[in-house]
Length: 305
Image (cartoon, rainbow, N blue to C red; front, side, top):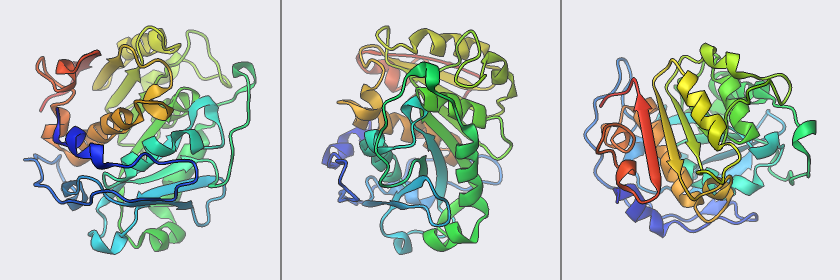
């Protein structure tokens, strides 16, 4: 079991009404890292679980920020930015509050689609349209606007950007991932359908990806299981296909395994954005960390430690 998994037991599950996460905040030794060229691993990664807050994105209507609470305690430019698309391409992020809070607790600024007080509205897949432009608007806001710089006190890292999404929100992440601003992509329980869907988004767009990409599925009971497998096979970028074989479609984001879900997402972004080899070892090689965990199946290509 990873150090992240053990210390995460101290993380209180966030509820819909929660705005502050009281984590352990205990400092641990940073893993040995070989950072990518011109990038230095963030000092924020030395914190196991940071207290977080959930708040509106100043000057960016329709988005919510999850971030470490005590920004003054962190170095400037130390928090990579992750933008998130909700399941069902919804304009509410409440269902993923535990997942997003956990990810932010690992030293990330997370900007999610949907206002702070936006509640889920039922919709059918046939009436659902993906809006990757909403993720890109969040990324440009976080990396270019004076409002974001003021809100984060300059602690945001404007050079390290990830896109992330669940289900239809994963389609948004994959589509947004073709933008030159993006450095890492992750999609949970997602993948383009054989025929274009959710507003005309199809598998031909996978060719436009240029960053390492993680696809996570919840096993055969996940409606996106086969799509994730087929999409992974088509990827020409370094990639990982990870399956929690009994998680189903939503448990890693909004169900009983949300803590596991955010740990996997945090490890991926730590690996790709921070050059953290210990995090990368969770995914890469025949003896990878997740490979040894019950119920997980891992494939990777184009990646090394």
